[in-house]
Structures are given as structure tokens and as C-alpha cells.
Length: 308
Image 1 (cartoon, one colour):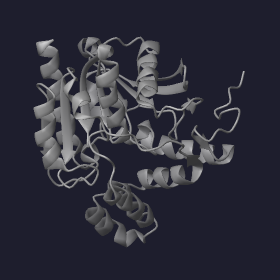
Image 2: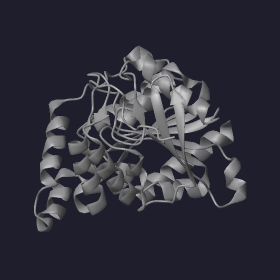
Image 3: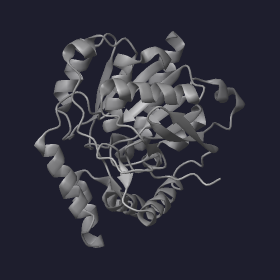
Image 4: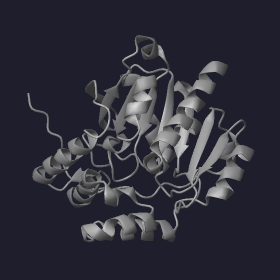
């Protein structure tokens, strides 16, 4: 039986591909980016009350590492789990890894109900983890995925061993400077090839110098319509209620948050939270400095496991 990968009806509050042809072009672009990272051991679909969630599973070759607490990766807005290609080799060499395509973003998941309300988002992620049979995970989120991870730590922390936030949403209201950077980066993808390295350095935008990633992002913008508002930041009371071990990684030149402000604020609000700033990067520390960030994330997870 053939399962449709698009919703049966058009809704203004549910993301969708503009056509089957553009969907297929986007999937092809995603596969090219996936190929830059570790090969997935398996793919699976998890049915939830909000839709079908597509998940890629990676695993260590070392049998002893297969029993370690797994890592779950949640990507940023307008992308899919292929964006983790710089991270899957190192992470999956040490632990089982699951990379989720978030419903409502271009990817192989199918959204049927809106997810922008915080409780609904937490329910969706909890149902996804339950469907994968995961009761204890290290959750890692980038950008919008960082808001999802932070929201999970606040609302549904029962399955979480730790949370790692990579230049995340959820800490500040998204400002104009970030949207201007997004638009400038998108326009820069059309620049002549010779100019892209300089634009990439100026904009702190690695998309411009990785051809496969550039194609995926450009195709996603054309192929998919995201239908959700920007998430609101958590309040100080909500942040202070979090008890899950938390690691915050910020790019020194981030335009989504004010790095120094948040590096001081989060450990003050969340007991035991760790916050670090990575130099020489903006919104994508796990891409610009993959080896360093991979090592830092794994060291943090190891420390959490030792205590636990």
C-alpha cells in the first residue's frame, strides 16, 4: 500500500509541500546532505496525535557503546535532520543516535495538527520518544529545535537524561536582526561562486560554501510552506523550574540571542546548568566547529551519565 506523504487536505495552520514534484526534489537534496554524514542504520515512522514523525537511527560499531544512553537530535526551522551531517559520525561512534524530522518543517515527517502551542509540542515529542521505545535520552536541539528541547525540559522532562541547546530559540524574543540575517543569507545563496566564501565568512553562514547544503536550503524554501508563528521565550519562572541537566552552547556572534547575557543568565536561573560560548561562529557552532562541539557535547553527556 502506498502512503501519501502530504496531508489529505490543506490547512492554514499545518505545514505542507507545494507539490509532489517539489517534495521529491527536496528529498533528493536532503539525501545528498545525509550522504556527507554517517550512514543511517535504519529509518522509521512513528505515529503521533499530531502526525507521522520520520526518524533516522545511527549506531556505534562498538557493541559496548550500543547500550549507552542514546542521543536524540532535533533540527532547526526550515531544515530537516540532514543538517546534522557534521555531527552524526562522532556522536554515533560513541552512542546510539536518533535524528528526528520535525513535523511542520520540510522533511519526511507529515504534519496533521499544529504544533506551535508549547504543551502540544511537548506531547508530540514525548509520543515520538515513546514510539521509539526510548525512556532515557540525551536531547539535543539547534535553533528552533533548541526551543523544542527547552520546552520539553520544562513540560515533559520524564524521558530526559539531559538537554543540550545549540544557539537555541526560547531564551529571547526573536529580533529583527535575526530575520535580516536569514534574508541576507538566502539572497547570498544566489551570489557567484567566487564570492560565496567571503559572504559565508561575513554572514557566519556555512550554507554558502557547502554545495549540497546550499541546494537543500534553497530547495526547501521553494518547496515547503511553514505554517507556525515564532515561539515565545520561556519566562524566568519557567526556566527556573527546569531540573534536567542542561548544557547551553552559544556562538559568540549569534544574532538569535545575546550570547554573553544568556551565558550569565541561564546558570543563574537553572540549577547546575552549564553555558559556554564558542568563538569564531554565529548561529551554527555545531557546523562551523563540529569537532570541538561534538567533543564538548559528548563530554557533557559522559559527565551526566557518571552522576546518574
